[in-house]
Amino acid sequence: MSFAIIQTGGKQYKVKAGEILKIEKIEKSKPHSKIEFKEVLAYGDDKTIELGSPVVTGAKVEADIIKNSKERTILIFKKRRRKNSRRKNGHRQQYSLIKIEKIFSKDGKLISEADKKIQSANNEKKIIEKDK
Image (cartoon, rainbow, N blue to C red):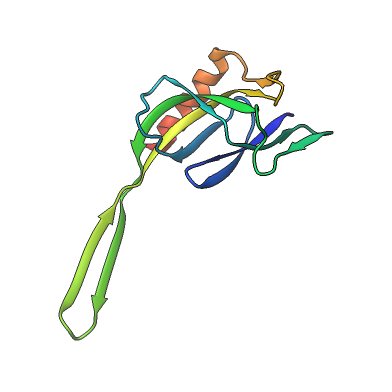
């Protein structure tokens, strides 16, 4: 099983082809569009691994954006006792739901590719329904 470690939104993710991830929202991105991650920290399979210092130049990961949305509301409530002082605040973090399509090595050679669209469409529906 081939994998890659990418960096986006200040976080690192270990990804495989065909995997669906929830990452921080990518600005100026529309659903059903392609995106490339050029900050590949490492890639490999069960036997070999290629590490970068800090990134592997030439390696990239291609993904499709499924949707952009917001998380559930997080309530922030602060109270100072006996002072009649309260503050209530809420926050909804934005995210992008992406599907990893292809992983390329530093030579530009295709390492792994996602399965057919039929199977992935069923997985996407399950995840989208689970988020609601």
